[in-house]
Image 1 (cartoon, rainbow, N blue to C red):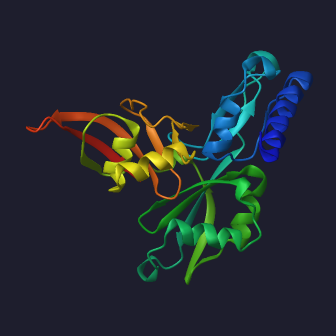
Image 2 (cartoon, rainbow, N blue to C red):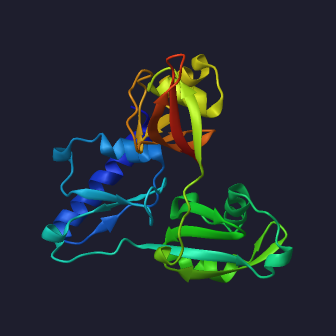
Image 3 (tube, rainbow, N blue to C red):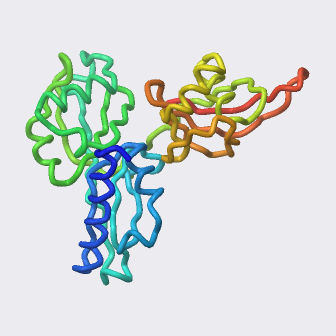
Length: 250
C-alpha cells in the first residue's frame, strides 16, 4: 500500500474515533474520487463511527466525509460547506471564463485545493463550493479571474439551478464500461480499457479497474484527464444491432 494511502486511511480512522469518543461530528476536507474510494473500501468495523459524503449539491464530484450520526452525537448537523457566487462586476464586458481560470485564480491566492470543492459555471457566473472556514477569505480576496473583475458573495445552493448538461446520443456495442467511455470521448477501445485498468476511472465516486464492468442507468462516470458524464441508459437498438445510448457530458 502506498505511503500516502496509509496516511489517508489513518486520518479517516482518527476522524471516526474522534466523532465516537467525543460525541461530535467531524469532517474531512474535500476529497477526490480516488480518496472517496479509499474510504468506501474500508471495512465498516475499522471505523468507530459511520460517515456520509456531502458536496453541497446533488452529483457533486468533490465531497467531504462527515463522520458521526444523529444517534451517536445527539444532534443534527449541516455540513460545513458554503456556496459562493462569483459574479462579474460588469457582465457586458466579462470574458468567457473556464473552470481552469477560476481554479487558477483561487490557487494564486494561496488557497489549498483541499478546501475547495466543485466549481460550477453558469453563463458568466461561477459558483464555488468551499469549506465554511475559508469562505470569508475568498469573499474578501477573490476579486479577479483572468482580466474579469468579480464580486464574490455567499449564496444558497438552492437559489440557483445547476443545469445538467444537454443530453447526447452515442452508439455502443454493449453497456460495458470500456465501450461507453470509448464512445463518449471518441477513443479507441484499447485506450479506454487502459484508462480503466490504470485506475483513472471512477463510477459513482468509486474507482474501478474492471474493464468489462456493466454500467447501469444513472451512473456518474469520471475519467481523469477527460471529464465526467452521466449515463442515462439505452434509448433503442439500431438496425445493425448496436445500442443508441443517452449521456450527459460535463
